[in-house]
Image (cartoon, rainbow, N blue to C red; front, top):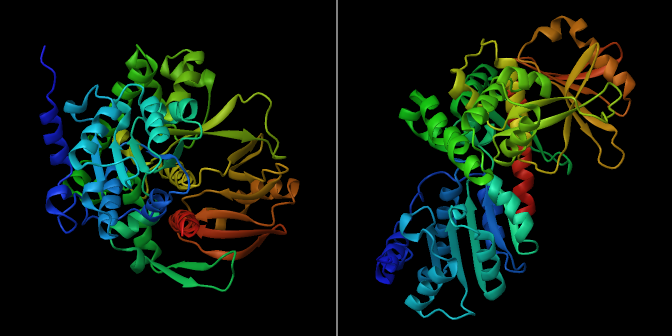
Amino acid sequence: MLEIAKNDIISRLQFDNPWWETGKKGKVAFEDTPRRKYFEAFHQKILDVSVRRAIVLMGPRRVGKTVMVYHSVRELLNSGIDEKNILYLSLETPIYTGLPLEKILSYFQELFHHQRDTKLFIFFDEIQYLRNWEIHLKSLVDSFADYRFIATGSAAAALRLKSVESGAGRFSDYILPPLTFAEYLMFIGREDELINIISTQDPLHPYKYSATNIEELNKEFVNYLNFGGYPEAVFSESIRQDPGQYIKSDIIEKVLLRDLPSLYGINDIQELNRLFTTLAYNSGNEVNLEGLSQSSGVAKNTIKRYIEYLEAAFLIRRVERIDQNAKRFKRAMYFKVYLTNPSMRAALFGQLNADSEAMGAMTETAIFSQWQHSMTIELYYARWNSGEIDIVHLKPANQSPSWAVEVKWSDHPYRSNSELDNCVEFVRKNPTISHLLVTSRTITDEDFMYKDVHFQFEPSSFYTYIIGANILRRINKFSQ
């Protein structure tokens, strides 16, 4: 049997790295596309050579990981890094199948006479296609102290689990979630038009935001729910015309039908698909194992495993329930599941409009999806016999609630105040909460009182924007 010739591999490397031939001023793929607001923090990690670790960029399919890598290549070239000191390759390319990273690196070293102390930047895209990738990558980090290794992968389950198991002290994980609503507005060129941003002197709240046209902001929010979590869908008119086909076939089905079965040896793919479909339809609603088992036809023990897999693959997020006293349950019988990207539901069950029955649950899903950009914050929902609060944050130190949000896609509670009685009950039982935020469709009121409880009303679309904008500003601030 013929083996792939060394010259053929080198020819492919030259094809994948056109800057070797064109130099710093040559065109780099995707260099003209807008950059994610995560880019600056990610690129600073690449430049930080004080820590001897490989960077592993993880996230769902089609959120822009490869594009961000190319943006980093462009930035490295702009900063004066020699073009022959940058190697990019995608391990999804068939010619690299089964090749150890060490061998590919040796061809690169030989081609340009690189030494062990040369400052090199090496990008391995879609690294999960290499069996035991984490062992190979750890070995390279240990062997070449002056080389900067960056890997990306969409099969997030494998990447996350294996980076923990085998890369202790050698990998720095970096998560790239779907687009925030703030990024979506920036990408379509309407952020400055629809949001007014004023700098303040308050170090805790350095920016004050206001919506300039809530009706237009709401229209874009509905578009965001339908397709706005994916950069390609934002820029491609053909995808926007049929986002369901793009998202369902190219993103969801590849994870459910290929990635997860291959990673975990799942034999009954249709069983996994039925469960995910059930969870997607119930995004934002409370579920329990018994009910999920009955509706999906999947055994309860199997459901537990599948939910872990779907979480690891960044398809869903599970949120635990607390009671009216903000106490956690010893046995978590009930919980909520949210799609990490609301556009997935529209792809499966049809697009939404502003008056769709599912808008309430999907608004809640969108708000939770912004919070996943802050990986350290723990959020819960409170539910008891007479009421529910959609989002509660507990202080890590003493597990007391510090703030809470009731999510509505309606202005009705502002006019029919009795709908706020469950919020009043919760605040009275948890005096550590100074006021409670209620989202609306169009109403803004920062100082609303009802039954001696201070409420703040903000439109849901505006609140979704603020969460993402503040988190992204914080990320970029810490990267500077």
